[in-house]
Image 1 (cartoon, rainbow, N blue to C red):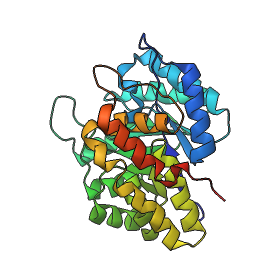
Image 2: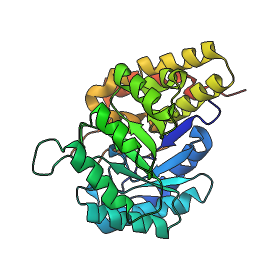
Image 3: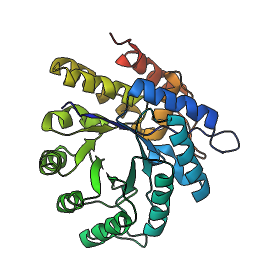
Length: 299
């Protein structure tokens, strides 16, 4: 329980010419470090960070600048996901050269279609692990990556290189079993989503992966849980029942960017042609957020 924490991916602001706005990114990272109090910052590693729109060299620059802007205040896990294990290895070497503390790697689907097999998934991770000494965050997300079975997840967790697992399923029966068989068994630390945060802690998991500003609320859930105040942790957790769920038709990234702007940190709009929240949806989100503990001072 005392080691519970958050892996937090800073959102990526873009300028009008669709380059990364690094001045704005500095403000986002300061908010993440100060208000979300992450166990680790994730650099260019998850879909809400919109790194897919960058060239490989631009992605490497985003990684380098993120590490620079975090400035050793907390550890950084670098996203190295790619369908080519050779490019993943190249990114892992880049992370090593910059002083990163871990790498995050998505379990890939077959680029030519169909789910990868357990043997293929293990072979992929072993190929990358042979080329880097950095501990890995095993990233499970069946949208952009493979739909990994429970058995395959356990086998992947047995790899010496896998120290952390980021789970995206929001499936309580799956999460509960994997926390017991992986985290409580000492194989790897298991992190879930904002919707699963408190129950994951209660089951013996290590925390969650949350984007800002939701991560700031998640940090308070963890604080209450660590203090033994389950009632307060539950009061805070229930706020995730509405936010961001009510606006998820827009997607987590647009909702997170809009919410972060409401919190006073402008990370810009989604990369085009995708649209930001506006009109009544934005007004309703703003009203909802001001009723949450995101805008209440901690004592």
